[in-house]
Length: 215
Image (cartoon, rainbow, N blue to C red; front, top):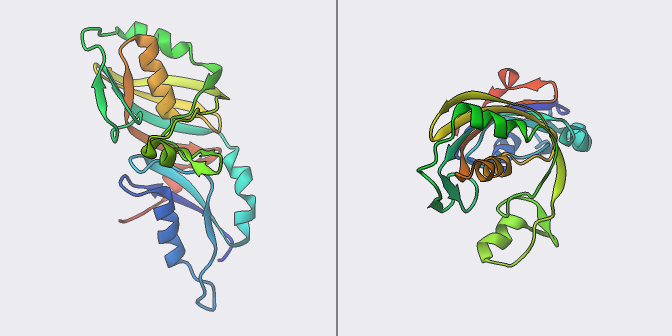
């Protein structure tokens, strides 16, 4: 089939564009010609989980998929910050003496439920004057990231053993979990950054139905 919705379980260590390129190499029409393939929203290279790719004429519907809400499982490390908000950045110790209790963590998480304003990370794929923000950040350029309103429908603690906090969150399209992790750390006064991220659901599409990608 040329026109498909392709569910992929992205492994760590490859970009979303790398996954698209790999699937594009594998797909051919009945005459052996390459088929157009596009993504409907990226994951950072360190992150894993559900990517929805579209092929053929389905690529015209990418905007419909971009608007779907998402569910993530995220591991956050308290006590430090990262220049990129994830394991790939420069780490800085903030406050290792302050150890929030589970009830304190839950109380802070509750404050993020609902519509909130986020400022996306500088190391992101958002375009600023036609150029990707992460490219500008790597050049050391001085620029401001535009804030946006997003919605957090639900956050639940999966596990908490200081300094690691694992949460499951159901969020609207456009929500940055790296930013959410940093904001949680700021509220706890401990600092925080994202150590692992897995997307398990996009709209009604589930990770259980996705195909594995072998690097």
